[in-house]
Length: 326
Image (cartoon, rainbow, N blue to C red; front, side):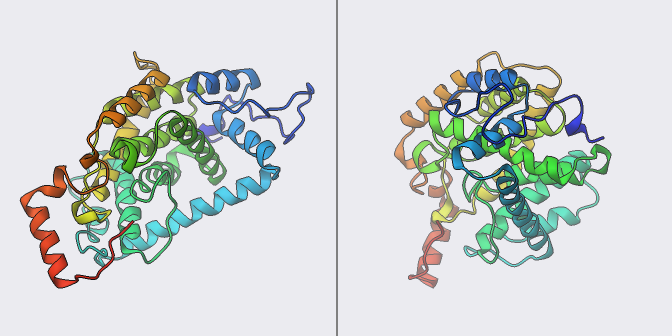
């Protein structure tokens, strides 16, 4: 039996009407306190609640929503294959070789097999995004798209965990719920609240998905989210020359590591002293206080270092009409 299936109930099969005559309409949570309480009320995982809620709100069947999510997971898995099989440079020529280089290293796998594989996947997906040759899934944005699939795919590939594709797909619904609450309180946009809103949100989504995949409770998922955001608060968005490459690509790898660390602590029973909903309010306040030059403008931070300025000048001279990434 998969770790994901141990000792947990799946939400009622009915997409609208429950056996007790109630449904989930009107129960859309806007805080983690509400989400955890609703999961306890309906005796289900976050993913089960999210899938059932999605069916009731959209009018689509749960089978259809599941299949749509499965296709997204397949899209990312294909992006990983492409990303790990090539060293072609990205559009800004700032990356492209990192994922394959790291995957081929046999000597310094300091994070262990799971952690090493996760950061390889994270790099592969965002390098593929920066090449622009194959589709990737925005989760929550293109610039932070490697973190969530890195964790879900790496866990699924670990044969000792016996995690099924169904479980992987369901964990993406957990991540979607996390994204929704973060967006409702703060933001998942680097242009609005800096990179804490992109890599921070992506790592929080991944941590919650990881906790659920390994049998954790909804409350543990909430603590994992809090632990991530506290660790990445204040992270600025300072892309070199406007490309979603430096420092964005490597930050995805660090986001994946943060997600694994936070999930490990939450699964062990470690809790965040500051409740997750208060952490998100803090994140919002920091984002609002952050200077605009640290919000995807390429006017601050790493983007105005000597090396970055020199690179941008060279790019403009060589290709004055080349469009930047978005």
